[in-house]
Length: 285
Length: 285
DNA sequence: GGATGTCTTGTAGTAATTTTACAAAATAAT
DNA sequence: ATTATTTTGTAAAATTACTACAAGACATCC
Image 1 (cartoon, helix red, strand yellow):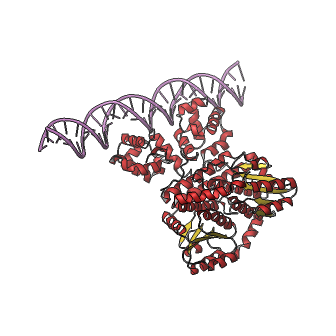
Image 2: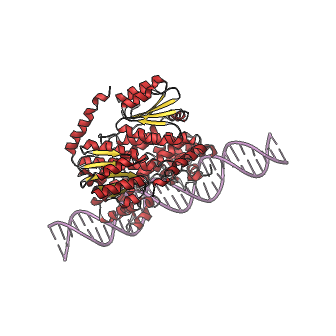
Image 3: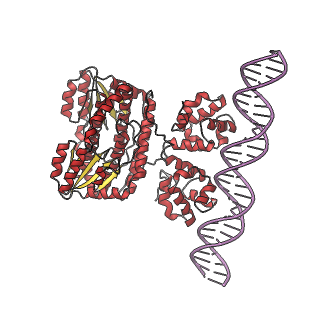
């Protein structure tokens, strides 16, 4: 509440401030929250009409948000909305490097955007709970997803939870068989249909472990056999060679999980993380 | 050129269309490219003055870009600029999961943005050339950066270039000693001052290999001993626990390098990538 | 229960900003 | 050198954002 005006995006400010508004101002707030994309194209008169009120009310609404005026509202909204039309240009032959760079980073940005919009918070919450109460966590991934699994393990073990990562199908299967209730498997697979992963997950499941799947396709075989299936949407057009954008989105989601678990017991976590940090001090000259 | 108007962001449109503009319009274009952030706050009169021209010229400039008018320009710019004021909110105790999610993904987006703005294209080009002509490539990284190195190796080996990855300092050092001219080492380190990496890089360098460093800090010790040091900027505030945003940015940059190398010999690469793909077919049920 | 005060909202007018019409320079062509 | 064409700017029109103020709603007090 105190750092009200410092908050990054206009929509958040509206959401958290909506209670303190007069009823006609609230009408404006509600309309803006529902149609941010449209508001950008409207004039203040249009918005007043759409919201069923008058122009001065719109202005007063803007001011209460800490904005200079109506123009400021539009600009603020524009900044926070999913950038542009995004024709999702893919890299093509003959592109110069700056062009490749631009296209790809833009695709990356959009992937993050899509993830932001498409994530199911309840599932995320459920995953976070599972991880927080896990007796131990194993991360599985093969091929490209192996690197993601590794990254995840490298984060979570710092929380003091016993964590292992396997990017080898045999090791996964063997280790999965040894799991039991209270254990959690995080299975990473872009396609969600990699046979090796599916096998390992089935074994882990039978052994009584809970499964969190992180995949690019919501309706994949992996998603079906998971306790929590986190689908990371992305159009993946930049170059169909290697799933780059979905990898970024997966990592971001894992980061969120990590932080959310870490936050559940902040004081203790902080201390533990500092201990890890200290242990690395003499690794730097 | 044909899909001129479909291009996502205003700045790109300006950059690619600047050639077709009249000289006074070009003045506007140049000012906008240089001070996009400022333009958002200016009126058309101000901008005309700043650019040393008149209002109608500004409007004509907007129209040539395919925009409706000056307001449209401002809104378009707002969309593409690093989102909001970004007080770079860090996740704090008591944040709900949706809030954590939001903050972190926004930080991720901003990291990509920063990377986009801060990258030195010449260095990138140089790195791309080195990699394209490499006899073999070794990827080094320890700790968290090890996962990045792994991801990189997993991409590049598909191009038919002999690629190895080591996340173990001893193996790195030993392997580095065996390198020679024509070989390339890609060293990943967020801090750029991890002793183990520095050691390995020095050995590789003495052995005659070229070094590409991917680091979060431009002025780090690693950057100094590299042939090409790619600094990936990022503010890294979300949670100082683990360098999440810089990791994403690093991966993105590596992806760009991969694609740019792949594109140098598109036909051949395409065939090779397809071969890799085919080899995985029966890994899915 | 009506009068008074405060708080909320809208009307109507004002100011600012964007946009257009048109004419003056500047450039190119004959 | 004159005329046509393009390019640019001046000045006025139109749109849009904003403000002053008053009417209406609501509560409070006599």
